[in-house]
Length: 567
Image (cartoon, rainbow, N blue to C red; front, side, top):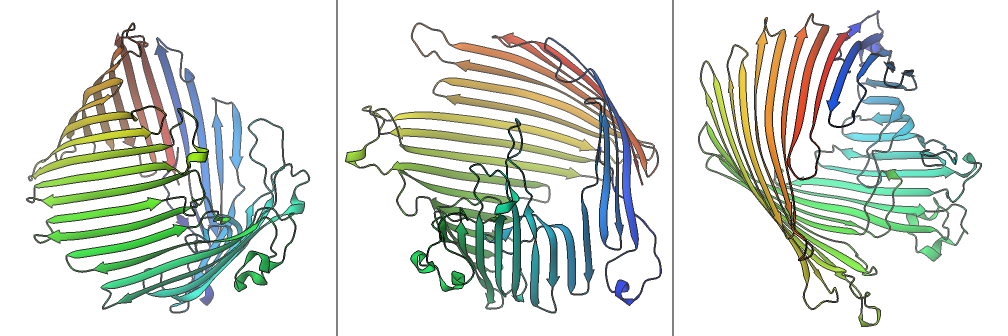
């Protein structure tokens, strides 16, 4: 359980430095809670323990900018006591100066350092529109090689340092230059196994400019990365790698070193009723940055995104076209090209009626780069085209009066998917086709008294070359609040029926049919004793009834009680 936060503060007389900052002498918040669960099942093995209880407590505090916390947990499920007090941080702001210590996550650029957690410090200086940021510390802790099963992946201790300088603001015209450097400490591990220490230096230029009264904007961001996969590999002269001069005196080139680039550029036109965005992104094959989590290299994307509004903004049309491909150097055995076209239309017919429509086309083409001398083995298909269409229509009606609100929503969609495999060694291409139809109808009614009623029905049908699946269901529910909304009761119940049919793979065998029906209910009550105390009780059940086929018929019933106190 997680408690909502409230704060109690103790203020002492502060000097001018504290008065010009967001530092407070002391703040604290936390919660304690108790939960109990009961569970039973018939027809299947129990999915969880028949009874369990859990007690939690947490405390978060801040003393003159230093923050930390304690989390306690005791559960009968594993019969053990846990606590966590291994995080401490400092965060304070004085006018245009921000200082952080502890676990920080600098975000200086898209491909340089973005989201990596550093246990160290971060300083941000913003006098006017000038910007200076510095960050550094440990980005990975040492983890020794261990033969234990499920042990986390070993790693060297990794140190990371980053800096950013420039003029302007992120959402306005600006020019920034940032850099990031990461290095593994080779001596941090006694047994390295096959693990190799790495080194990475990135330099990023980031610029954006608005023109013509901010109607047109141009933005670009390019990162150069010098990456060494193994610091133990042989040193080589820097000129042998054709490394740009900016890296010449900063890194030692080795046999496992490489320099690559990643970047993007965007042009935007913004008018009263029309907008257009053009974008281009390219990530070179082999591009690596230790300052981001994962980078999918060898990618190129071209994006076109127009938008328009009509009839006093009652009609809005937005489109997005993306053309992408990999294998930018044409040195791989297969190339993937994809086209994604999406359009969204929103129309506010009246104040009560609105309609939303979507269309999406996705085409993926996989082509092999074999020549006649190195053709793929017989029966292996490397050429494939996958195409899908998605159409969705969603009308919505809302009727409001002084006493009640009605909402009626209808949704219908169609999804088709086709895959064609070529060059399989047969005379005809092999393909798989699938069509899916789905629809739903929902209605809700709410009253000022706190009573709300809702109902929904849904239908889905999927057909493919070898099977057919149908699902139909519905549910009804009600919510009611009592005692000045201190007590809330909620009841939901529903039914769903599924049918699956698969064809036979041989003429002498019949197809398989499976048909089942599920019934469910959920009853929940929440009561707010005071502004800081509340408890809830819930009961839910599910019954799966086999109508045809070889599945199981079973029932489940579960109840829970939860209490929470906040301070």
